[in-house]
Image (cartoon, rainbow, N blue to C red; front, side):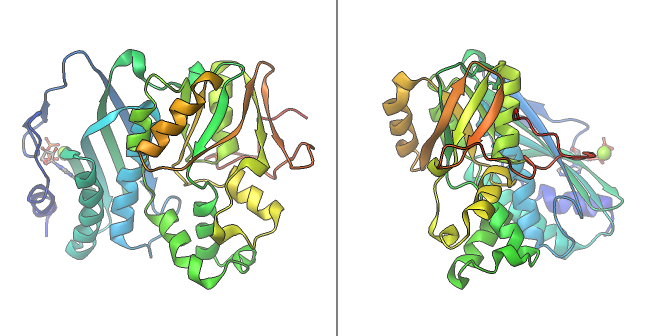
Length: 330
Ligand code: ADP
Ligand code: MG
C-alpha cells in the first residue's frame, strides 16, 4: 500500500457533517463555523514510547489520540465539530491503520466529530491531532478566571489512570489492587472519556477549568498561575474508588494528585453556585467532588486529613523537565 491507498482507506470511513462543505480529498477542507461563536482549536502530539507503546492495541491508540484532544475542548466548554489527523507511520500496515482508525472514528462518532483532513507520511510512529469546536467566546472556561473563595471541583475518580499505568508497568505498588479491578483501571488509562457534556454544562457556572492530563496538582497549578491566585486542596475529599481502597494513603495520593492521563475536569466555581454545579454534573450522569478552595495567596497546598501539608514527590509529568518544579510553597 502507498500513501494514497492509506488515505483512501481513512477517507472511505470518515463521517460527514453539514458544516463540512468540502472534506478529505482536496488541498484544504472548507468548513462553515456557526455565526456568533468562537472557534476553539487545540492540538496534541502523541509519540511512540512516550504517550503510547509499540505493543498497545492500535484501537486504543486511535481512541486516545482523539480523546486527549476532545478533553481540551471539554475544558474550554466547547462543542467539538472537526478533527485533522497527522500520521507518521514506519510502514503501510493496513491492519494497524484499520485498528487505529476504528478507535479514532468510534470516539469521533460518539461526539459527532467529522475527520476533515490530515497528512500521512513515513517516519517513526507519531500522531498529531487538531480538533475544532465551538463556544460562545464569553462563555468559554478559561484558565485565568479562578477567584478567591471559589470551590475547587474535580469530576470522576482521578488516580485510576495512574493505577492503570502502574499495573501496565508491573510496578509493585499496584500489587495490592485486587484482580477484579485491574482490567477496568487499564481501560481508564487506554480509553479515557473526554468530559464534553460536563464542559458544556459548566458554561456560565464555572469560573476557570482545565482538564487533568499531567496530574491534578500540576494542572490545577496552571489555573492558579494563570489566575494569580492559590488553592488549598483536601486530599481526603478525593473520591476513593473500590479499586483503590486497598492502597496505602501515600501511594494513593500520589496517583490521585500527581498521576496523569485521567482527562477529568478540574474547575473552580462560586460557592453560591454549588447546587447548580451539582445539578449540572448529575444532568451529565458524572460524579464530581468539591476538593478544595481558591485562596488569594499564591501557591497550592495539599492538606492531609490531619491538616498537615502533604509534599508529593512530584506534581505531574513534564516533557524536558530536568528536575521537579513543585508549584506549592514550602
Ligand atoms: P497535499 O499534498 O495537498 O498535502 P495530501 O496528498 O497530503 O495532500 O492529502 C490528500 C487529502 O487527504 C487531503 O485532503 C488531506 O487533508 C487528506 N489526508 C491526508 N492524510 C490524511 C489523514 N491521515 N487523515 C485524514 N485525511 C488525510
Ligand atoms: Mg499532505
